[in-house]
Length: 235
Image (cartoon, rainbow, N blue to C red; front, side, top):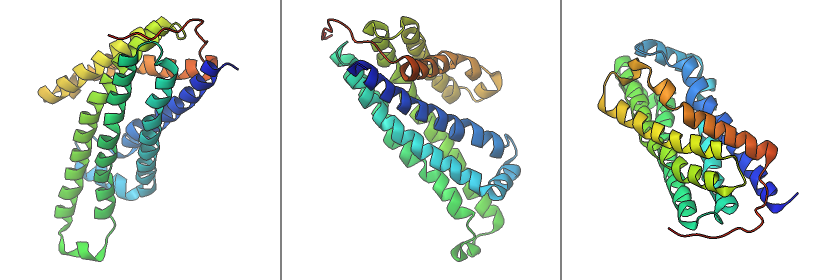
Protein backbone atom coordinates (compact mmCIF):
# COMPACT_ATOMS: atom_id res chain seq x y z
CA UNK A 1 0.00 0.00 0.00
CA UNK A 2 1.49 3.38 -1.00
CA UNK A 3 1.93 6.21 1.52
CA UNK A 4 -0.99 8.21 0.14
CA UNK A 5 -3.36 5.30 0.60
CA UNK A 6 -2.21 4.74 4.18
CA UNK A 7 -2.68 8.40 5.05
CA UNK A 8 -6.05 8.44 3.30
CA UNK A 9 -7.26 5.40 5.25
CA UNK A 10 -6.24 6.99 8.56
CA UNK A 11 -8.07 10.17 7.54
CA UNK A 12 -11.09 8.12 6.50
CA UNK A 13 -11.16 6.30 9.83
CA UNK A 14 -10.96 9.57 11.79
CA UNK A 15 -13.65 11.06 9.54
CA UNK A 16 -15.88 8.05 10.18
CA UNK A 17 -15.50 8.55 13.94
CA UNK A 18 -16.41 12.22 13.52
CA UNK A 19 -19.44 11.42 11.37
CA UNK A 20 -20.86 8.61 13.52
CA UNK A 21 -20.27 10.28 16.88
CA UNK A 22 -21.52 13.58 15.45
CA UNK A 23 -24.76 12.02 14.21
CA UNK A 24 -25.23 10.35 17.58
CA UNK A 25 -24.74 13.37 19.82
CA UNK A 26 -26.06 16.11 17.50
CA UNK A 27 -29.03 14.28 15.99
CA UNK A 28 -29.97 10.99 17.65
CA UNK A 29 -29.77 12.01 21.30
CA UNK A 30 -31.62 15.35 20.82
CA UNK A 31 -34.32 13.56 18.81
CA UNK A 32 -34.94 11.24 21.76
CA UNK A 33 -34.74 13.79 24.57
CA UNK A 34 -35.61 17.27 23.33
CA UNK A 35 -39.25 18.14 22.69
CA UNK A 36 -39.58 21.35 20.73
CA UNK A 37 -41.83 23.85 22.46
CA UNK A 38 -42.26 21.69 25.57
CA UNK A 39 -39.63 22.54 28.17
CA UNK A 40 -41.21 20.38 30.86
CA UNK A 41 -41.18 17.27 28.66
CA UNK A 42 -37.57 17.93 27.66
CA UNK A 43 -36.42 18.14 31.27
CA UNK A 44 -38.43 15.05 32.20
CA UNK A 45 -36.84 13.11 29.33
CA UNK A 46 -33.33 14.14 30.37
CA UNK A 47 -33.96 13.08 33.98
CA UNK A 48 -35.58 9.80 32.93
CA UNK A 49 -32.86 9.01 30.38
CA UNK A 50 -29.81 10.44 32.10
CA UNK A 51 -27.60 7.63 30.79
CA UNK A 52 -28.49 8.50 27.19
CA UNK A 53 -27.82 12.17 27.94
CA UNK A 54 -24.40 11.24 29.36
CA UNK A 55 -23.65 9.04 26.34
CA UNK A 56 -24.49 12.03 24.15
CA UNK A 57 -21.88 14.07 26.02
CA UNK A 58 -19.34 11.28 25.62
CA UNK A 59 -20.15 11.09 21.91
CA UNK A 60 -19.51 14.81 21.60
CA UNK A 61 -16.14 14.57 23.34
CA UNK A 62 -15.11 11.71 21.05
CA UNK A 63 -16.29 13.63 17.99
CA UNK A 64 -14.37 16.81 18.81
CA UNK A 65 -11.23 14.90 19.77
CA UNK A 66 -11.24 13.07 16.44
CA UNK A 67 -11.96 16.35 14.66
CA UNK A 68 -8.84 17.84 16.24
CA UNK A 69 -6.66 15.21 14.55
CA UNK A 70 -8.56 14.86 11.26
CA UNK A 71 -7.39 18.11 9.59
CA UNK A 72 -3.80 17.35 10.61
CA UNK A 73 -3.91 14.03 8.76
CA UNK A 74 -5.64 15.69 5.80
CA UNK A 75 -2.87 18.28 5.79
CA UNK A 76 -0.33 15.49 5.36
CA UNK A 77 -2.39 14.12 2.47
CA UNK A 78 -3.15 17.38 0.66
CA UNK A 79 -0.45 19.91 1.58
CA UNK A 80 1.45 19.27 -1.67
CA UNK A 81 -1.55 20.63 -3.60
CA UNK A 82 -1.45 24.11 -2.09
CA UNK A 83 0.33 25.04 1.13
CA UNK A 84 -1.73 28.17 1.83
CA UNK A 85 -5.09 26.45 1.49
CA UNK A 86 -3.83 23.50 3.55
CA UNK A 87 -2.85 25.78 6.46
CA UNK A 88 -6.18 27.61 6.15
CA UNK A 89 -8.06 24.30 6.23
CA UNK A 90 -6.32 23.20 9.43
CA UNK A 91 -6.70 26.59 11.11
CA UNK A 92 -10.43 26.94 10.44
CA UNK A 93 -11.12 23.37 11.54
CA UNK A 94 -9.02 23.44 14.72
CA UNK A 95 -10.48 26.79 15.86
CA UNK A 96 -13.87 25.11 16.29
CA UNK A 97 -12.55 22.46 18.70
CA UNK A 98 -11.99 24.61 21.83
CA UNK A 99 -15.32 26.33 21.16
CA UNK A 100 -17.05 22.96 21.04
CA UNK A 101 -15.30 21.62 24.14
CA UNK A 102 -16.10 24.72 26.21
CA UNK A 103 -19.67 24.58 24.95
CA UNK A 104 -20.02 21.03 26.33
CA UNK A 105 -19.68 22.53 29.83
CA UNK A 106 -23.31 23.60 29.46
CA UNK A 107 -24.34 19.94 29.30
CA UNK A 108 -22.20 19.16 32.34
CA UNK A 109 -24.03 22.01 34.10
CA UNK A 110 -27.34 20.32 33.27
CA UNK A 111 -26.05 17.11 34.87
CA UNK A 112 -25.17 19.08 38.00
CA UNK A 113 -28.62 20.67 38.15
CA UNK A 114 -30.43 17.31 37.92
CA UNK A 115 -28.05 15.59 40.35
CA UNK A 116 -30.20 16.40 43.42
CA UNK A 117 -27.08 17.43 45.34
CA UNK A 118 -27.86 18.66 48.85
CA UNK A 119 -26.71 22.22 48.15
CA UNK A 120 -29.35 22.49 45.42
CA UNK A 121 -32.16 22.10 47.96
CA UNK A 122 -32.24 25.87 48.45
CA UNK A 123 -33.50 26.27 44.89
CA UNK A 124 -37.16 25.95 44.00
CA UNK A 125 -38.01 23.31 41.38
CA UNK A 126 -39.01 26.06 38.95
CA UNK A 127 -35.67 27.81 39.45
CA UNK A 128 -33.80 24.60 38.67
CA UNK A 129 -35.87 24.06 35.53
CA UNK A 130 -35.13 27.61 34.42
CA UNK A 131 -31.40 27.04 34.93
CA UNK A 132 -31.53 23.78 32.97
CA UNK A 133 -33.31 25.43 30.05
CA UNK A 134 -30.89 28.36 30.16
CA UNK A 135 -27.89 26.05 29.83
CA UNK A 136 -29.55 24.11 27.02
CA UNK A 137 -30.07 27.42 25.20
CA UNK A 138 -26.44 28.34 25.84
CA UNK A 139 -25.47 24.97 24.38
CA UNK A 140 -27.54 25.54 21.23
CA UNK A 141 -26.03 29.00 20.82
CA UNK A 142 -22.54 27.55 21.22
CA UNK A 143 -23.25 25.00 18.50
CA UNK A 144 -24.41 27.82 16.25
CA UNK A 145 -21.12 29.61 16.75
CA UNK A 146 -19.07 26.45 16.18
CA UNK A 147 -21.07 25.69 13.01
CA UNK A 148 -19.55 28.76 11.35
CA UNK A 149 -16.15 27.08 11.47
CA UNK A 150 -17.64 23.65 10.68
CA UNK A 151 -18.64 25.29 7.42
CA UNK A 152 -15.67 27.57 6.71
CA UNK A 153 -13.06 24.81 6.83
CA UNK A 154 -14.91 22.92 4.11
CA UNK A 155 -14.08 25.53 1.46
CA UNK A 156 -10.28 25.17 1.53
CA UNK A 157 -10.72 21.43 2.08
CA UNK A 158 -13.03 21.17 -0.93
CA UNK A 159 -10.64 23.25 -3.04
CA UNK A 160 -7.76 20.94 -2.14
CA UNK A 161 -9.84 17.85 -2.94
CA UNK A 162 -10.90 19.37 -6.28
CA UNK A 163 -7.33 20.24 -7.26
CA UNK A 164 -5.62 17.20 -5.78
CA UNK A 165 -6.12 14.69 -8.57
CA UNK A 166 -6.19 11.93 -5.95
CA UNK A 167 -9.87 12.30 -4.98
CA UNK A 168 -13.00 12.80 -7.14
CA UNK A 169 -13.56 16.43 -8.17
CA UNK A 170 -17.29 16.06 -7.44
CA UNK A 171 -16.53 15.63 -3.76
CA UNK A 172 -14.54 18.86 -3.80
CA UNK A 173 -17.45 20.70 -5.42
CA UNK A 174 -19.90 19.37 -2.83
CA UNK A 175 -17.59 20.35 0.03
CA UNK A 176 -17.17 23.91 -1.25
CA UNK A 177 -20.92 24.23 -1.82
CA UNK A 178 -21.47 22.82 1.66
CA UNK A 179 -19.24 25.53 3.10
CA UNK A 180 -21.55 28.21 1.74
CA UNK A 181 -24.55 26.21 2.96
CA UNK A 182 -23.28 26.17 6.54
CA UNK A 183 -22.58 29.91 6.54
CA UNK A 184 -25.94 30.79 4.98
CA UNK A 185 -27.66 28.48 7.47
CA UNK A 186 -25.96 30.26 10.38
CA UNK A 187 -26.89 33.71 9.07
CA UNK A 188 -30.48 32.64 8.46
CA UNK A 189 -30.86 31.17 11.94
CA UNK A 190 -29.22 34.17 13.57
CA UNK A 191 -31.11 36.90 11.73
CA UNK A 192 -34.59 35.41 11.28
CA UNK A 193 -36.48 34.18 14.34
CA UNK A 194 -38.75 31.86 12.31
CA UNK A 195 -35.93 30.41 10.20
CA UNK A 196 -36.17 26.90 11.69
CA UNK A 197 -39.87 26.73 10.85
CA UNK A 198 -39.15 27.22 7.14
CA UNK A 199 -37.32 23.90 6.83
CA UNK A 200 -34.64 25.53 4.67
CA UNK A 201 -31.90 24.24 6.97
CA UNK A 202 -32.77 20.64 6.03
CA UNK A 203 -31.89 21.33 2.38
CA UNK A 204 -29.19 23.98 2.45
CA UNK A 205 -26.76 21.76 4.34
CA UNK A 206 -27.28 18.72 2.09
CA UNK A 207 -24.21 19.40 -0.10
CA UNK A 208 -22.05 19.38 3.05
CA UNK A 209 -23.67 16.14 4.22
CA UNK A 210 -23.14 14.39 0.89
CA UNK A 211 -19.67 15.85 0.47
CA UNK A 212 -18.41 14.92 3.93
CA UNK A 213 -19.94 11.44 4.06
CA UNK A 214 -18.83 10.77 0.48
CA UNK A 215 -15.29 11.92 1.22
CA UNK A 216 -15.20 9.87 4.41
CA UNK A 217 -16.25 6.68 2.61
CA UNK A 218 -13.96 7.31 -0.36
CA UNK A 219 -10.94 7.83 1.89
CA UNK A 220 -11.79 4.78 3.98
CA UNK A 221 -12.64 2.39 1.16
CA UNK A 222 -10.77 3.62 -1.92
CA UNK A 223 -7.93 5.55 -0.29
CA UNK A 224 -6.00 8.00 -2.47
CA UNK A 225 -3.52 7.36 -5.24
CA UNK A 226 -0.05 8.90 -5.31
CA UNK A 227 0.42 11.73 -7.76
CA UNK A 228 3.39 11.10 -10.01
CA UNK A 229 4.77 14.65 -9.86
CA UNK A 230 3.31 16.59 -6.90
CA UNK A 231 3.95 20.32 -7.09
CA UNK A 232 3.82 22.89 -4.29
CA UNK A 233 2.02 26.10 -5.20
CA UNK A 234 1.41 29.34 -3.36
CA UNK A 235 -1.30 31.94 -3.75
